[in-house]
Image (cartoon, rainbow, N blue to C red; front, side):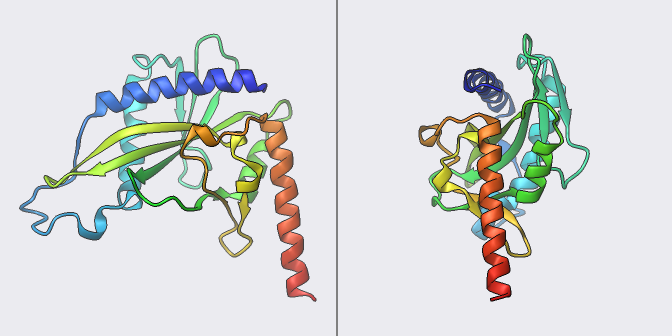
Amino acid sequence: MSIEKTETLRKKLQGSLDKLISKIGKIQIGTTEQFPLGWRKAAKGRTVWRILEELITQNLEKYYDDLGIISITTSDSEVTIFDFSTLYENETNQAYVNIKSAVLGGPSRKDDISKFDKLIKFYESFTGEKPDFFIATFFLTFHENMTLEIINCVVFPIAWVPESDIGINTSNNGNLQLKKYKSIEYAEKKTPEEFYQILKGKVDTALLKKRNKLNP
């Protein structure tokens, strides 16, 4: 997959998700009678993440044609690294997408993106060119009437994250950690194959350091 093809696919996916946000509108979670003290600690992206994921994928499945998508496949498991994949007209390759949420104006920090071993296995399951894998971050705001609203979405090819931003957590969680995936201005354009090779190298180095630490 070339950088130019990735950019074309990214723009198509961004356009589809922007239209989806307009269609969804405000999301009613409860009433002020049910939540007399408001959102309190629940006003976090991760609190409503699973509901948001379901809402987005259901609406994509129902309205995909209106959004310019030829076909969509949602993940049939909660442990896969992507939530859905799409196919566009005149494209031979699917776009694989992982949904994330963030509070608008919230702190910028490194987040767990996926299990690094699962991401590597995902790339290795393709015998030809590596596919495009996107992180779609939906930015939320919480209203006093117990509604939340998706303000915008950033579609970021995971291959474009800066090499210096890639963190490998070799603890029991085994997560790939990234920070600069919520704004396309941080993109350092690479092909999926180049990212895959960088990721493998980072993982190998991190695992070697862990083994040396455990067996000095």
